[in-house]
Length: 512
Image 1 (cartoon, rainbow, N blue to C red):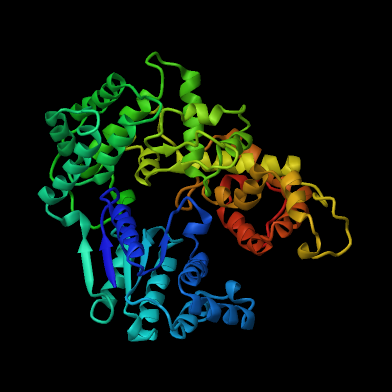
Image 2 (tube, rainbow, N blue to C red):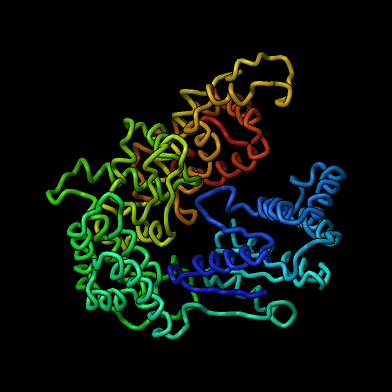
């Protein structure tokens, strides 16, 4: 097992993707799982082993045969605990696979973004367990990356003598080695094709980046934005970023083993990145102050960085009650930090390019321009209210017009078509995540004084309406969407997460 950890933006995901591609070309890649906090199916540990099993089945015919037998013998295994999933979906079929390549490499990126700390630690222990259970002929190799979270480092420390043979701190590699790679990357994009940057400007960018690959990557994405194709335009955009050089001091690299979110006050290695993000955001607005456009940008950005799932621009517009193309238009000049689909806005989701961007926006000591700062607790309150209002307006009994006779979902032949017509994507998002937004409407269990009293009153009213008139409709809709298993967890989350200030306005008590 090889464990690579480093601060956000140091290039861990790039290395993981490169290793995966190299192993795939050699026929030795067993499976990959790239965790991402912005996507439910990529942050929930319950999806890991089924995903790995699917990839192994595509690679190894005999494994596929054994997996089919295992699933037929244990049809409910996908709803089992992680250990049972690992045994039935991975270990037992792979142990009997006769044509598996050797060595067999598994790549896991951003383990720290898997659920909470306990989920990541459990996965780590299970991976170590699997390596001991599988036959040595397979020569299993596991490559894992994460930020330097204390809980994960402690867990890895307990495996070093038994399983982990290599541990590397990416952010502690000598500066000149990392900067040589960054220099090559910048020259390949900004110097060789169009000569956008001079040699001196390349060196200034290298100095700005220090050992953060994300700085170099963001520079390239900003300068090479497809919206700006002329050489003069791109040189102008480069100068915008270089002008941010004066707004920070670039001190020595910080090596403290903490996550980015724990580094208060814009830590030294991120000052250049913060200045760059502010320059990019400022460039997205007209030079002359426009409070309306500033408010719209902050509203859209606030939603994007606090959503629990990345959704399409069209779905975001429906969720926020915006006109068609408003979201895409608002984010049009932010392609260097957010992937905005130019085509098929109804089917392609928005994507945050790097987690350092939402961390920056939601940290007041780093995002020092009030035009862009996102108060995450207030934003979650707003989204909780939006979700409740959508459910109160759109949910109804027998929403798919199936009739009230007891019927299994599998017996409704056109259920998916009915759901597409009756339960639009923004309503689905509301059904799935209203309680999670409500739970995060307050920081650390304390009442957030800044949450507007009017919003709190609206939340209390919307919640009363939902529980008194729409709760059964919500449960029925979750059942039709095959998500009924999440209902109890969502209700408990809502109960535990209610703002103290709301309780006096409620006429009910959620089940605990």
